[in-house]
Image (tube, rainbow, N blue to C red):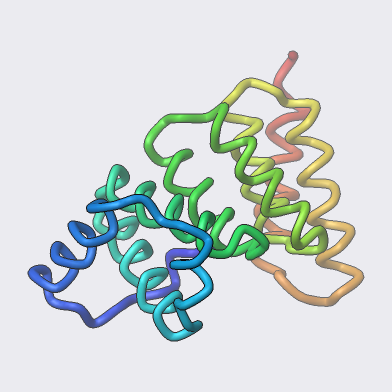
Length: 162
């Protein structure tokens, strides 16, 4: 999940960056002048806000990144994670789907979609996502923790009468 990233900005620096982000709308010309290290710094800022459970600011930062680079799956995934944590499930679903569009083999995104479907009460879709995590995880011989958790969720879903 996206929470693995930490940045080393002071609180004052982060607040200044956020204020500057919100001052004026971004244009395509502006976006083209931002280099990858700047994007990485902004991403780290959003992740730190997400870890701090400051979902409103995390949402703002990740939305901004999706505008700056609309083809980067990790920005949509982080945006979706922030929305999900903030309780905005419908928009989170859309953003996870965008992330999956750009990175269809990403097991973390598929797993997160399973969790979101459970939160939305859509157990059939959750079942499909968790089965996909298991299949892809076994085939790749990776993500053993998510494979185990997916098995656990599938067992719970089977017990639940929906």
